[in-house]
Image 1 (tube, rainbow, N blue to C red):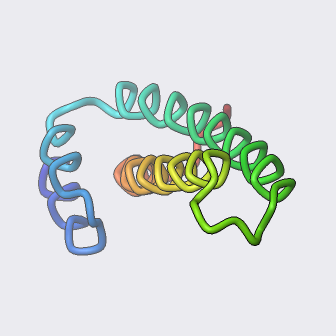
Image 2: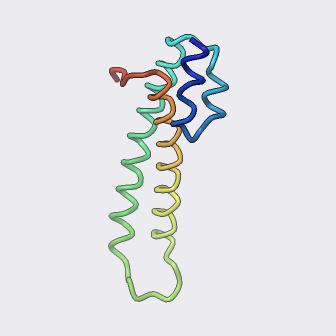
Length: 98
């Protein structure tokens, strides 16, 4: 199984995760993947809420608004976590039921 996981690293940006999990059983990877899916859903909801708040302000302001900065930070966090989730899904080889 280690060889199979090493073969997929060419398609994965987060190679350290592949190495970290190379000797872990599928059950462990599935647990991590399900948790990452749940976390991603939470982060998406947060980014969407902050987007709605950010859209409600004055777009002519010269200084960046706190709401807009919070939205950008949440979106960056969501996309960073999505990279880890995508890596986990690729390692697992399927999408588990959540």
